[in-house]
Every structure is written in structure tokens, then in C-alpha cells.
Length: 317
Image: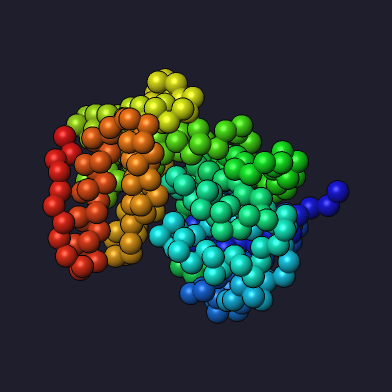
């Protein structure tokens, strides 16, 4: 049984790192990019990583999805703010049995993609990663990088095992989780507090951890996310909060992608990271007031930052 052929949708901090590592290991990788297309075609891809120094002078880069070859696995590495583009981007490359792995943050995207492409097999790829794109074709991987894969569609055991083998053989630490919703909510236990607070407090992760008041606010949000996940039927032990705090304590100083998006005046991933989990918890009869307040504050800041108006905000405390 050979290796899969991969299409990587987006060559930023996520797609550039994992796609670069896969190609470095000899996997057949094809990148769908837009703004970085000319650079990748002329100069290739470079990744500075604790895992390896990756220099790929030649990569298979495409500006249009129609030009991609048939691929076994399509890894979606776009921000969820671009998910409205997925029907257009995926339609030319998805065939019966194509595996779509959503390597994104947040909740609910797998359900949407599976509904749009019922002949495909859909999974999530949750990336515990500190990585940034410094410039076109230049990825800086700072810390961590483990991926948790979890199936949305039925019949995914063998395909996910093959993907796992491909990624592990490329030096990428990863595992398979048995329950996608639980894996998603566990990732939200980190994303919701730290993505949001790094914006609202204008701080990096280490500054939040070192300041008692900020750490207390992060801890309260962490525990509220766990409450929401448990209300939605996910098996998340209360001690997971301690693991998240320790995980972040050990992390190198880091600005999550939401803060970088804010600084660059790009739209923030509020819908999938905050609104969808809030709606799921509400449906389960669980109110999450701190998360709702943080979502409102992020919405206000996002609208103000991009010059589209001002919205009211609730107190975060």
C-alpha cells in the first residue's frame, strides 16, 4: 500500500509547515495558494522548525483548484473566515471517496463540508501548534505541532491510519482520537481563552500566564469551556484545565493567529471559535456568560478595527 497524494489548501502557518514536512519526506504534495502563488513558483518554500530546517526550492503550487491533480487527501488549512470559499475551492478536487481533513480551529465546519460533499469522507485535524508565516513561502514554526485526527464520516478507520502513517513518517507527531466533538471541544479549551484574551488584553501567552489577574481570567474561561463541552456530551475531565495551564506555561512566548489577524486588520475567527460553541452549549441548556462576553468584546474590536462601525460590549468580568 503506497502513500497518499495530498492537496494542501493554503500554504500559511499550518499548511506551509505540514505540507513542507510531508514533501521533505518524499510525499506527493500539491499546494493551492493565491497571494503566495508567484513566490512559491519562483522561490519555493522554506520552514524554520525545531523539527528540521526545510528548504524546498521547487513545490507544486497552483492558483486555481481546477489545475490540481487528483488527490487522495485534501487538507484544508485556511482560516474559518474563508470557509465560504470552500464549495468553490473543493468542488474541482473532490471525487467519491476523497478524504477532506479540516485542519482548522473551531466547531461545526466538518458538518457543513460533509453536507456539501456527501460523496467525500470528512475528518478533523486539530493542530496544537505555535507557527507563523513571516513572509510568502517563509514559515516560522516556534513550538509544539502535534495533530489530533478524528473522523466525522463513517468508515474512516483505515484512511486515518494511513494518514497517520504518512504524517508520522514525515516527523510530524500525531494521533487519532475516537470522538471528533470531544477533540474539538478540548482544542477550544485552549483557543477560546488565549486567542481571545491575547487580543482583548494586547498580550502574548506568557504575559497572561505570568500576571495573576490575567491568569485568573484565563482559568475561569478554561473552566467554562470545559463546562460547555461536558454539557454537549463530551468526556472532558475537570483536570484538563490543569493540563492546559501547564501546556501554556511551557509554551514559548506566542501571539495566536487571532492576534496577528487583529494587528493586520483581517477578520477574526469569531463565528466558529465562539458563536458556534455558544450556540451548541445553549442548545444543550448551558449558558456560558464569560465566553459570550468575550465574543461580544472581540466582535466590537473586530468591527472597530476594520472600520465598519461600533457594537455594544458586555463586561468580561
